[in-house]
Length: 186
Image (cartoon, rainbow, N blue to C red; front, side, top):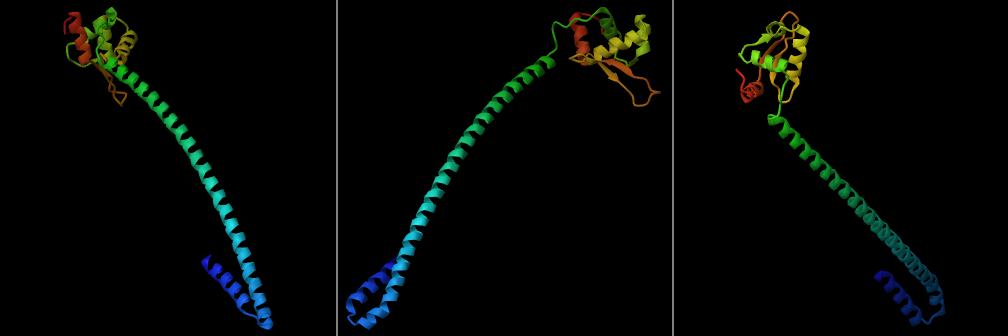
């Protein structure tokens, strides 16, 4: 920009200091070129300023949009975290409830008799349970499966992968605890 100003100043000085008409006529195209360069420089400077202003406006809008999106994401994140913390608290309570033996657990007579029978510490087959309790093997299997699926698990079911080796049943720690709390023999 200063070089263009220096050129304009030089052209003005030359046109004032030169009195010879012929030299002046020779300088006239140079003066016109300088004027055109000056106008082009002004036009480019104005266009540049307009582009800079447009880019600043776009950048401002992008930053505002980004801030809005970040606020939305932060709000969503905080809600998800609250939901997860609530779910975690429920799960911790459920785990605690499941790990704590139920003091109010009551079993029917058949299930209690099965626990007493298994309380001898040996592994037993379902037909041994049915024979001891004088019930059908299907009924014994029903009660054994219920005891195995209770929480806490009162018996252990040892299923075998090969069909010629039968499933065996034994009492668990929680099953022994139930018998002790009920004052029944182990």
